[in-house]
Length: 300
Length: 209
Image: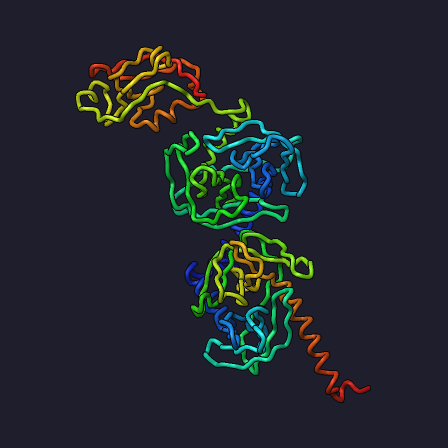
């Protein structure tokens, strides 16, 4: 019998589950049921931060059933990502997709919630959202939602494209228990920082602000089209902002060259590399653009 | 890749191929479930819990109605084999290879009494449930949605082969089906046993040495 298009698709999905299943592991780090993780380097597993409820006796079960001891190498509640270091290099490193997810594409939510094997649920990418501030104080530039079913233990597992490559990491820890997917590019770059530094530094400026429309004259002065900026309403004493010379009434329009329209963008821009470094902050003062270098503080 | 028509056509063909084998199994006192024509000569496979205390009525796709005879039942695998007085049934074929996680599945049945419903999903997990005898029962879990009335109906793969018998014996939020291997095993033993008991009271001349 020749293969119908349905059999082709069915085989492709099973192949994708099998391939990505090689790098999908069980993570034993909480009292209740275990969750999942993704092997992103020979001895490193990326998982969801909220499923790690203990620091000791963490184990990871690989695709071949072997159990390996692991330690927390880094964790960040804000993005709900954590990196575990395995006692020994093991398993197959996951292959990340080259193309970002597209609305409507089919995808498998994959997990290894038990020693009985991988589990999967089929869905389509039903929304691509962001930037959004997470409830745990982080910032997601982008996230995916799918209509796949997130069964218990699916947090930390991959969202898999039809070719078996990985689109992102699924977690129910960021939006009230509903599952979202953290895109692979963000998850992987965060994982590298976590593996190296153990945490993500979050910047602190020390201002309160409000979004205001920029009049045409101000946009002319900026020599670019930017409809809004952040009007500084107050500056905290001894904060990086006050030390750097920002005053009430300034309109903040860019950080390190990226235009800022909204508080969420400022929040996103102050994370990671800029912390502790002199960073160019562009403002409008008296309608005229001005750039000052301010050393970004670290938020506790 | 060898395309045989469009995607929609292929799914339609699959549904048309399964439907003649799908029956309604109506208990005398309880609600109805589904069943599968297992061979042309009147064998119907369904869930044990659909059958109830008395032999149920079997309703075919062409609306013919039969009183059935209970051939065998086993609450520990939640399967029952019925026999009706028909010789022109269209049976379904059990899959010859094990299912794979991720492959596409279609569940057929009569959820909440809605006749001839199809739901789509994939194999979510291949696991074991423990029955009351403490035996491990292979289970196919899928993300196809099932409801009461799907019980006893087939879960088929993209090749139109039965990979499971839909059941709701272990609860939880996933749809479960009893693996086809359990069903074929159950039917084989049931037939062997009934052939044996049929022989004992009325030995045919062939059996006399």
